[in-house]
Structures are given as C-alpha cells and as structure tokens.
Amino acid sequence: MKKILFAICLMALAAVVASCFSSKGGSSAAGGEVTGVGGTSMSEPAPYGMVLVKRGSLKMGTEKTDSLWGKDVPTRDISVDAFWMDEKEVTNSMYRQFVYWVRDSIIRERLADPAYGGDETYKIEEDKNGDPITPHLNWNKALPRNPDEDQERAIESIYTYHPVTGEKMLDASQLNYRYEVFDYVMAAKRKYRLNPEERNLNTDFETDPNEVIMISKDTAYVDDDGIIHRETITRPLSSMWDFVNTYIVNVYPDTTCWINDFQNAENEVYMRLYFTHSNYNEYPVVGVNWEQANAFCNWRTDYLIKGLGPQAKFVQRYRLPTEAEWEFAARGKDGNELPWEQEGVASDKGCYFANFKPDRGNYTKDGNLITSKTGIYSANSNGLYDMAGNVAEWTSTVYTEAGVLSMSDMNPTLTYNAAKEDPYALKKKSVRGGSWKDPESFIKSAWRSFEYQNVGRSFVGFRCVRSQVGTASRAKK
Image (cartoon, rainbow, N blue to C red; front, side):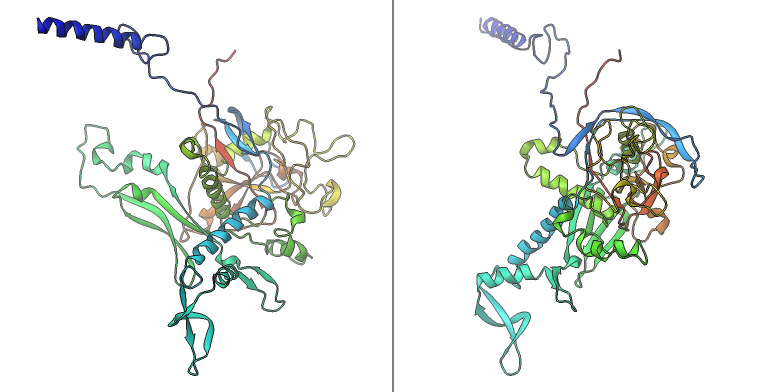
C-alpha cells in the first residue's frame, strides 16, 4: 500500500513540474521537447560622447593610384561588426583628466608613505652640529608630525621648478601609469592550451604530455632610480597568468613635438600652452604616442567600470579602432571617398568641409592655421566629426605594405605589440585621416600612413571605440 501511495505522489509531482515548465515562457515544453533557456535581452545605452556605427561592408582601399606619391592602396571587400565610436577626437580637456588622475593617484600613495605623511613621527637627519638637514628624511630622530605639512609635502613632490625661470610645473617624468591586460586571443589559441590533450584534436597523433610550450609576454617595472624598464620575456607556459601583460607608460604628452616637427618655425607658444591653457580645451590632444593612447583607453575603461557595479562584466573595453573600422566609419553610410557627400573639399561658396592644407604654404585658407576645435565642421552620415583633417588618428593595426590583403575579410586587423628590443621597423602603426598640415589627397578615407608607436606628433591624435554587445539580427528584404 505504501509503495502505491509513493508512486501516486511521484506522478502528481511530475504533473506539477510539467505544468510549471509549459510552453509559455518556460525552459522546456510539454512532452520533454528542448526549447532552450530564456534570458533577458540587454539594450546597451549609448556611451557618453559616442555614436553607433552599424555593421556593414565596404571595398576597403582604392583602385586609383595616388597622384602625389604614386602609391597603390591595397583593396579588398571586407565586413565589420557594429561598434561605438567617439563622435569627436579626444580633446586636451579629456586627456588632461587622465593626466590629473595619475597625478592624484601618486599623491594619495605618498600621503600613506612615512617619507611624506601617514605616520605619527618622521626622522630628520642632523649634521655634526645637531642641525637638521632638509629635505632628506631618515631615521635619526623622532619629531611630531604636522598633517598639513605632510599633505603639502606630498603634493609638492609631484611638481618641479624650471631651473632658470623658476616656473612651477608638473614633473612629467613622474607621471607613470601602470596597467595589466589579459590577452584573451593568445589564451584562446589551441597551441597554448594548458591541457596538452587539447592542443591537437587529430587523434592520429599521440599527445606528448611533457612537451614544453614557450609563451611570450610583456612586462614592465620601475627601478630604484625611477627609470621604466619594459621587456618581453619568453618562458615555458605554466598558468593563465602567462597571458597577463604588464605595461608602465609615462602619460604626459610630448609638448616639444611642435618644435621638433617643424624646424625653424616660431611654435614656442604651442609648445608651452597648447596642452595646458584652457583656451585649447576643446582642441584635439596631440603629442600622444600610440602607447599613451592605449593607456588612455585602458584608464577610460577602468574609470567607467568602477561606477557600474555588476553590469560591468558586460561592458566591452575602450580601445583604438582597427584600420578597417576607421575607414568604414569615415566613409559614411554610402561609402564615399571623403566623409562628406559632395564632390571636392569645399562648397560652391568656397566653404571648406575640413581642416587641412588647401594650398602649398597656405594653411589658413580653410580658416585655421593649426588644429581647430573639434566638431566645428559638419559630421558625416555616421554622426562623426573630423574624420578628415584636423589631426590624423592612431589605429590599433600594424602598418604593412600589404595592408588588408594580409588580414581576414571579417573584422580585419593585424596586431603586434613590438617589444623594446624589436627592430624599429616593427613598431609602425597605421595612422588614418590626414591632418591640418596635409594636402587634399592625404585626407581621403582610404589613404594609409604610419607613425612609430613611441613617437608623438603635433598632427596625430586619436579617438576611442567600443565593440557593441549583441547586435540585432534582421532578414534582408
């Protein structure tokens, strides 16, 4: 009798479970059919200051030979997924926020350092007459601390004074930003699997469990003299930590680029004021090399994530655009040769569509001498400003003569993090868009150029992108 009652109870329970997972909104249908597991879709809000470039395809490059240099730009039909892109180039004001964040982080650390503050006593070295020697600190004598003096000492330590003019300024040499990046791409490659049996799926070959797999990673440290050391180390693969790359980058722009890029030119005012004066706040930042631009992208990501909470895990990282993404975005929705729809570079009334060098020696014909405020010219059909001229822009892609021909035709790119010891030729990165100093042919969307990754120029800036999560599918009609 007990067995019969138990069986009846089981049948009743099964009926209840089946009703709970019915075909309406459940995880499985009646009769045991697989219907999948449900979830809540996420509509990603537009990131601040960015516009969405929807996925699509284009014939990248141009079949026309450049009339100025006689160069052929490689062509290929490619497709890219949707991504968010800064509607304007990164400005001095935006980049200064990064610089000041690094400055304030150093000050906060020093407030907890006994040499600057954060302890009840400090030690002052005395000379042979018993008089204190400043500002050197050691452990000879304990004296009560003054919190206000500690704070002032920590703040002042990040500044320096010009040895001749006495001008107070940030000590740019101290503004180092350290960050780590996990390399998902390298970790995903089959040849680097931690389990030897997963490295080769061909069962005709036996797996050697003792095979030594070498892995290269970037690392960096600061020595006792404050000098940054960067190197690429190669060692046997041992754990997932071998895919973590460490970088230390000095973030202050090279303001001397205005002098070094233009010999025998009176550009001192730009060198001294372009990055620091508020009159240039909305101008594109320049003098930032490729390594500094990547550091900014990482900081911008971390700055965002800290304010998002649990949703942060779904956020894609800010990064530099690939060369293909940049050209796709610049050409606009109709794939134009230039970001605008009209033929030529000026309207019928002689109004220019971009900030570039219209004539030989005449930089001001378009209304500007050097860079201009971002966004004062009309946006292209994607809602992006200054995709031609103003400043050329860094991409994440390595520069090669083969260009897109050496890449995939889906989300094409080519990456290589050149180590310090690598030949200098391997440190070329693609730069797109032309600048305020370039003629008309250089501002075309397909034009390719390069700069070395450790060089900041007065005519090169950047903007960031973020991959969109879960782009919507649709049927072609």
